[in-house]
Length: 178
Image (tube, rainbow, N blue to C red; front, side):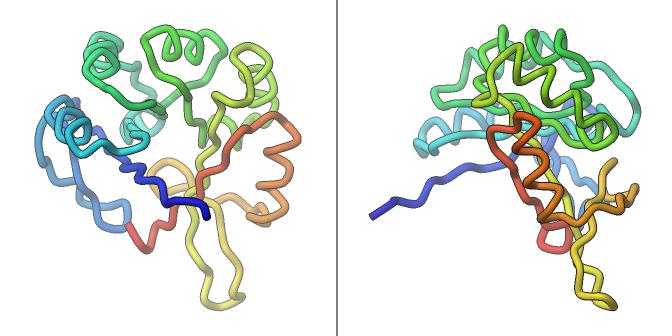
C-alpha cells in the first residue's frame, strides 16, 4: 500500500512567509527559514516554496536567501517563482533545490518546459496549474499571476500536453481551497 506523502507549500511575498485566502490578502506569518527548520523537525517528505511576487511584479529571485533555505533544509525542495529561462532553472538547481516549478511562463510559452527539461531533466520540472471551477459551465479554468489572469485551456487536455513537453510533475492547486 502506498503511504501518504506530506508536502507543505510555503508562500513568500516581500521576502517573508505569508498565508493567503483564495490567493488574496497575504498576511505575514514569519520567516521562511524558521518554517524550514520546523518542517525538518516534523520530517516532511518534501517542501515547495513559491515566491508569489516574482511573476506578478517581474522581480528577480533572492538567490542568497534561497541558498540559505537550501542549506538549512533536510528534505527535497522545489522552488517556483518567475523562472523564465534555462539559466534561471539551472541557477535554482545549483543552489541545492531538487526541482523547479513553472506556471505563468510555461503557459505563455509551452516550449520553455521542453528547453528546461532538456537542460536539467524532466524529473526536476514541475508545472503548477492554479485553477477555479466555473460553476456556470462546470469546467475548470486555469489562472496565473496569483489568480488574476485566466487562460482558456481545458485543464485536463492541457495537463496531458504539458507532460508531452517534458513536465515531470503537474501540481494542481485549487484557488478556492487556498
